[in-house]
Image (cartoon, rainbow, N blue to C red; front, side, top):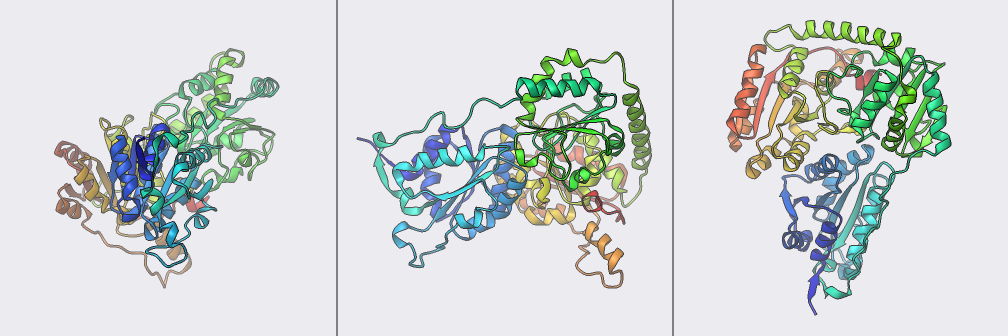
Amino acid sequence: MAKIHGGQIVARALKNEGVDTLFTLTGGHIVPILDGCVQEGIRIVDLRHEQAVAHAAEAYGRLTGKLGVAAVTAGPGVTDAMTGIASAYYADTPMLLIGGRHLVRQELMGGLQEMDHPQMFRSITKWAGTAWQTDRLADYIATASRAAFSGRGGPVFLDVPMDVQFDVVDEDSIVWPTEYRPNAARGASGAVLGEIVQILQRAQRPMVFAGSGFRSGAAELAALVEALDAPTYLNSRARGSLPHGHRLLGNYARSAAFAGADVVLALGVDWDFRTGYGRKIGADATVIQIDTDSTKIGWNRPAHLGVAADPVEVVRQLAVVAGTLSTEGEREWTAELRALEAAKRAAAEVEAAVGGSPVPPQRFASDVAGFFGPDSIVAVDGGDIVSTAARWLQTSHQGHVLDAGPFGTLGVGAPFAIAAKIAFPDKLVGIIYGDGAFGFNGMEYDSMIRLGLPIVGVVGNDGVWNNIKTFHRTFYPDRMVATDLGIRPYHAMVEGLGGHGEFVDDSEQIVPALERAVASGKPALVNVHIAETMRMSSNYSQ
């Protein structure tokens, strides 16, 4: 009878779950798991820091819809990954972090990196536990996966003691779980769907707003909003659900739409700091809020009709009856908002046309977004620079903007981009950095070079922590501290590692430099000296 070790059981259980890639930083406590992945044909992508490992697994899950998986060694390996797990938790991303653990037979003896990891994770995961039995490892993976995909989704943590990994069992004795999580989306009941339709039919000034919990169903969303002739706004994971340039897709007039709408159809929306806590919606507006996670409904903003269901599935249901919602011609309300959008965009374009040295931030954002265009995958990493760039990005595919989500973690850019290039090797993958953010995981350029991943990064380098310096100027102008970085040669670091690096301090050179970066065929970084501003990011000023 064939024998199989615990690491291979873990790997085969992951393969049964549909996992094809595992992100890691190697360590002695996880060697059997890595060996199992090699035997089972799971690709291993090794990075330089465990925080980056967790971020990469999250991004891979976002982009593929599969369970993103990371494996890190015990003790500091696990604690290093915690920030990435917290970021995934607040972004509602299904992913699994596997940690190594000291030997069971050395429990409480002070073994190397002995630590009870799961209790640290229980506030930032949907499930956390330890796999104590080799013959039940597949069941532990199934349990973790089921929890990861529950509700909107979220990270889970499983640590596996080193001896549980090394131990061998009879292969025939293992029960391999199948069909262990739901495979049908939950829509609205007939009565509730009818109520939604009636409200939308009566609406004179409807708007649609989709957010973090709306992650597919682009074609159905387009059919619905076109039938309604409803101005539509997207944030977070929903960006790209309508293509850039769609007639009904708004970008600059969301506050005006909130203030004037009589019906707001909110699909997987978080009424948090990114959306002004829902306070910009008119007092008399009817809010229809649909979310897989019932705890999001009515959070900070009352929902007149709150529906606990998958918003994508409900949109599909509504798309089927879109004919009953159709209007004749363009609504006056829609025309007014489109005119306001056009005016605001024209004003922004005037600002973005201003050149110079150092480069004005709006010019930087406009040129970089235009270069990446509608089909690239772009990771954004920073504070003020992300707020500046967001309105210029031409995202036309769901999931193709990778941001840190509400946790606001810096350092996501490189690992997100690495995951994107692994998942979609033929896509142009870019990173838009703030100079402060680059310092967190900039050494992952070493990983890109070692792995042969030609990713194009661009730094908006103003030499300061802009949001924080703005705070200091406002409250403590005579005692500013820890706000300045200087214009550092980050591009030279990338060159030194074997990549392509270039410094730009004139607006006319941004696009040519980016073109040279792509032409190099190497991981590249274009370091752009931008002007310092005194504007605070909307993340802080809501």
